Image (cartoon, rainbow, N blue to C red; front, side):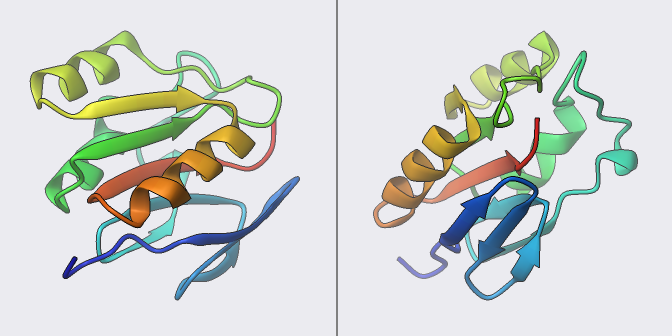
Length: 122
């Protein structure tokens, strides 16, 4: 694969380490790279949750599968409009607790163009 998605090499409460990107709290990852995920850019809050604007960047970078983390305590919701956008885009979606989401994402990154939004706290 030409632009493999970066692997998450460490996850603990409030801290993630991503291959090639370093350390941070929350990340947006996609084929070929990623960046810290700043919720303020799109007005994301735990409820109603992940916004359509949060995932558009992942689609724009060629993600064919998207993993959305719900946080370590499942506090982060996902807007129905976000799931609708992904369904309309024909993208496979996994919404899971953060540790499970990281495991799934890292496994997928070996074989498919995967993107993900990862929240390392609640």
